[in-house]
Image (cartoon, rainbow, N blue to C red):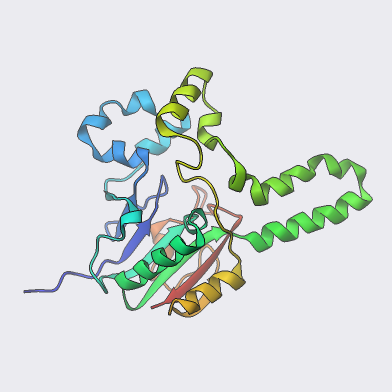
Length: 248
């Protein structure tokens, strides 16, 4: 019996940032993707998604697998050449993050690459400390100081989902009732990473040679063709990120 072909790239927890490339399998469990893949729900999508949400929904490609990642990855051992996830790991508690990274290692082929993008806590902390110093010399800077704290901790403590806060009062009430608060929807940051602790975590789990990358550099062949770290202008999609890759 012939062996199944190696998957070029798994894009885990893709949300709205999915690649249309046939070499990529985009995976998520979000409401938008469930609407996109269900013929019945698709009929009601224009009622549920409005404005920017509707534009992002319509841009989603068809190569999407709707799957709850808390149940593991539905792929065989050694079946993927590369696995990527962006701004996902920080939403898991530390114990669950280890389980998740071990599951990724199971699915990667020997020598395969895991690429991780997370908020850059070191960058946020340095910006905060620079602003503390600025506040000591410029009284006018103090009124902006909370935004530097918010960049580090707001998503750890928010109660209401960010997108829901922007809706009309009736729609806001309905979304909170049906979808729950920010924690229930998985928006809360449960841990933060920098180049030190993420590298040490990967080594402890048996990955090899963790290295930081730029948004447009990678050991994954033809990385930039997939467009997963690029905005519409070809620049960095999430500038407050840092990127790390390691091999199985």
